[in-house]
Image (cartoon, rainbow, N blue to C red; front, side, top):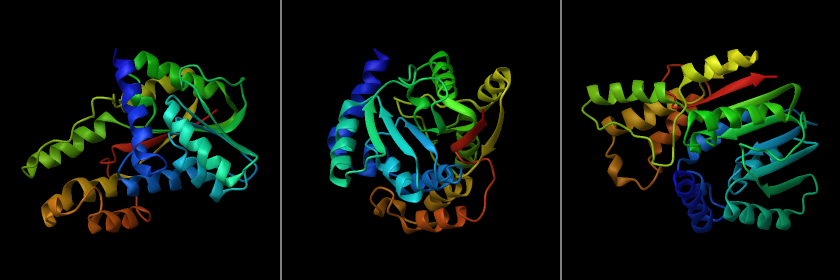
Length: 257
């Protein structure tokens, strides 16, 4: 029941928003930061899997940034893949393709890709057991010495950010019904158990502190639609030059296979 509900939500998003970034999220600033962060681990000539690509918005951005051997986008929602393929026909790119698939059972052979990345994909799985299976699948299809980048939402930074919001008299931020944020402590233990080295890239803390706390204290944020408040751009620009703080709900675990 839960899995059907989640899939229905993303099918609706794909149908409603077509090729817009709104299909995956309205916060274009964090999406840009995600793209830039993941891009730093991709080199020209790589074979790349965007696992949970949505409508292909970020997949096309990564293609533009690199001279890739190939890039494949896979998503569970048929409507998302339909939009991605429509855009692909317009661009006529031979070394890019999109297909429907499940992160818990990736339809590629072992050690196919140099880089495999997810962006807010694992958190759509309703249990830790399924999340572990998805991570293992991403590792399976990654070549030795390649990277798996899990750019996901995490529970501990959300608790920290909400503690500061509470001190300032603001309502806490909550997970969406279709999300199950990862716990960093559990993920760290799981990766260590598998025997892999990893780094944690806290690429969004300053942006979150600005856009989810200070924005509501220093501006009349309700007068701005979506994420159009100009303070969001200011903190996204600051984020590009500075990192750290522990407030970034979106962080990246970068696993070296």
